Length: 230
Image (cartoon, rainbow, N blue to C red; front, side, top):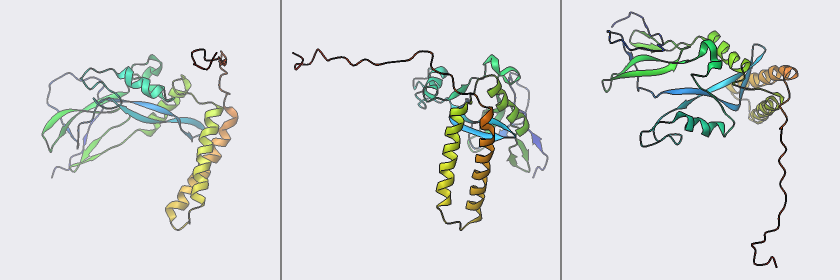
């Protein structure tokens, strides 16, 4: 057995055909990017940080064009309509984090397929004793998330914070009605209580959401097409 550790560094661009090590994975994943759902936030180290989720671009998924024509912006529009913030990799506001999606050369040993495995620049898989160990630079990842807030890609305000806290309180209330017969449940309650306290401590520093610049009013009109309108 080969016990030599092999590190796989994310590659922003790779075009050479030189020999390389291939990361063994169960499947070769699809290109994706990150988004922030409107109420997915956490309080960490005295700051609000967005919790990020992947958007996968795959034919037949998320209304992606099943004929093979790819339009990532069409997929993003679906999530933006739900209030999500899409973190487009080539957004200039990302600064040093621009093109944060990277690849490593990978293979699926079961099928002998070779290709790319997509991941973020904060991840660094390593193969040790035939096993793949996934590591993430959490300090750099949190700095990235803080940057998303500072440049306005992910927006937090007092209304969103109150909704997040309300959801936490509801989860806590539900857990408190469950018999505390396991250590796991008690840990969950302790964490929820601490999360709520941390979030409430940050409420004072948040701005109010911007008021709508144009008020929309709807005038009641008689239906003159009705047969009973005479």
